[in-house]
Length: 466
Ligand SMILES: [Zn+2]
Ligand SMILES: [Zn+2]
Image 1 (cartoon, helix red, strand yellow):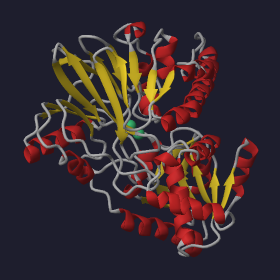
Image 2: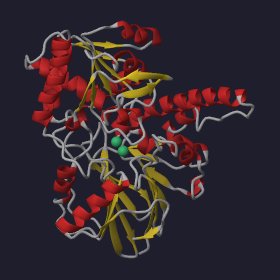
Image 3: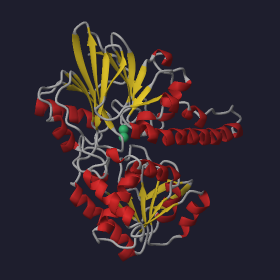
Image 4: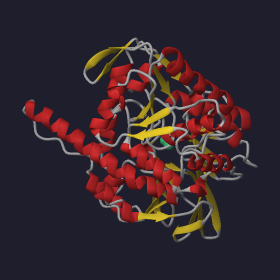
């Protein structure tokens, strides 16, 4: 049975996850993500699909992060008319994240148009608009975890816990043709074990073809207990000893809710008192509401902490700043505030203002809790730059910078290997994806050495008969 797999993105790089699968009976995508960070992203996002979008039968979405969903509006705009399957929580998150992304595209296009006109060139068009993004929503088909769907003749699929963010899933696809059967497993993004709120990644025991993420395939995070202590130290040292602010760049979905959860838990245990968390992102606030509506995704501890929070609403002050003026008012806070804002890699959004007002102050701290891709402002800060360019100004970096890897939503090398250890027999073929090239190559080597797996790093755009 001939099955051809092509990585359209997320191969030898972290963003742009999109895998085209051609089976004897159907053609489908796993994810349709946007390229982010770095100068190559814009042209890659704008390039035409290698096959007519109208010829794709359906799409399976592993989770709501834009590097997995951000080009859905584009493919719909270009003629895709099939269903997009996702877990109910993922679908709800997409409902706010995709229109927000469209809104950002429109604003950027406006800005570029003004620049282009000043330079005597034509106008820039947005990749897609908010309205284009809204056109994805009616295509969403909800699939609860572990339920089997049959999206096309001869194909069934199941979504399993990936433990990465709310609603995130490993997708297992079975293809049948003339009495033969092949199982294709796509991990999407796998979570760090013990991550707040969500359950750990579900074990998988067999696959003919496995696509595995490798974001942190070269790193080992600290365990959750040690991570929480690190986080607590950053908070108390900044807020109490130095009297500054704690700035946390965070993805609206995932880290924001994890931080809220951890602060609630630390307050519940009496380790901190009277904290104020500013969630300076309307999107993050919406995602938090959505999280609370999906207790079916929670682990046991999350149920307890969130129940406690409901009965002690004043123990931890949470201020959501919706309007721009409210956000600007935070610029005058000299100390005592924990400010969470996007974007997660400091490339856009309100976080830039908070960095501008706090990076140069040695009393303040920046707490990095998520992955920072090469070329992003966040990466420069993590790598110890003494000066960075923020909103057109050179800003000195005098604030303490804490990188708390254990709060990353991604599995580390040991998590990945331990998940791989669940397989009862080596998968027929293993593609290591979603990682910087050197990291993916190293991790594929690790899989070959340790498990004798037939692991390789795919080339983007290269059709492979599996
Ligand atoms: Zn993700
Ligand atoms: Zn991802």
